[in-house]
Length: 576
Image (cartoon, rainbow, N blue to C red; front, side):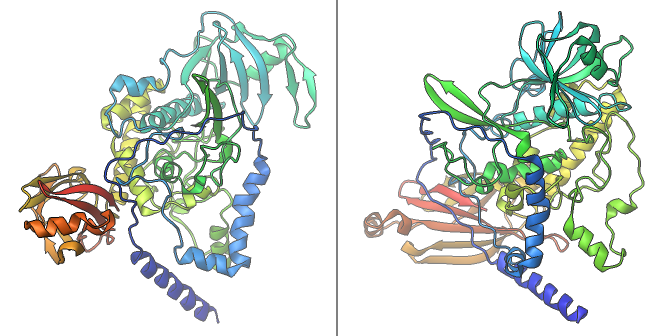
């Protein structure tokens, strides 16, 4: 009976793989790049959200996974690969700048200084005078404070855990720099050094205990909270100080929409920016990517109100778990991973994963466990399931991988330098690990698509040529020699249809050219063509890279061409 169930399960997986391979590339074709849509103005401020952390954890870690066990059709749909593509890609398979994401390093290479500075001017808090605590809490091992610096600017200040100086504060700052440069909205964060003798309690400061009871506190209480924080040789304490954002509306959910915001019209689990964030979170081991580590902000620009969506709290990223270093299991399994638990139970403990056999300890306490050793870019897991991450497709992964690939070593070193690690060896080890995980990320996703970019039409109307850059070649994932493509060209209006394998000459930088069948030159054809709807005028070029024997079969890229009498064709869209 058990063997029969195993055979049925394997057959189901095989069917799912077949259906996934047969899925079509979908595209909305336009004749010109779409401008960023105008966001409808808000008539009034949305209601602030305050979801319950425990309820959120139980929903995604327990209830939903169990529903796949007790409601078999849900498991079947999951196995069959019933994911839909993201709702908001453009005709170029990208996203427009919006209140969720704005193109930065992926479109215009940022300077080293720009990456190191992050959002804002990069100066950080004013530490020349007294810090005033106006809110304090004690959770876990280290305290969290909301303070005003000497200039009266408010900051959320987070300290490193005892025995692991610089661990969480450096992770907070470095990850925020790289996510900002990628295009996401993050608060201004900087490493700062605070003299505890300059920290004072604000008048009327209260402290809330775990039972919700508030009591007034003063300077002595603040000093007691600071007592466990690691001290430097000069007596100061190190912290990550993140500038407080005004107009807060609570976190956004990674699923559904905010009903009160007319600009929030795409379900979050189907947004390319949030699905593609999976790739960057995996690269940076940003484990705590849940809705409570996001924040919607109401901004007023010239009398027009809109909501901007921020990512916050990166203390559980890179090698840091905020209160301790990460363990080898982090990033391989969810905190409560029912699939892994079930597998171990069914196999009486014989089932195991690579992290259980891993014995390499962290080299630097300030870096923690952050390595390429156990990193699987396509199967990385954060602390608990994220709906947008669960819905990501290969196209979303490729989009995110291009953002990761946009960072060179100099930019990564600039971001790491902003973390102010005192040990040069620790900074170098962290930099090398980020680069190694970048390279694994790029290789993983670039082998799963046909990554042709910088498309152009050259040559003449009678002999048009497609110019392109193959990113897998330019990034060194595959060699230029022997790179071949399955080519299908379909031009129904001209009754042209060809299929063959092409091996163009490609430079080491990935630049290549492919000759295309030209449209007919007679006037009668063009007169007839112009009388048809745009959709019936189009030609479609499909290219699929031929993979090496040990590589996965990649998705093709479909390039949509509008015939143009003067130049042969004009590219109007593509999808991977």
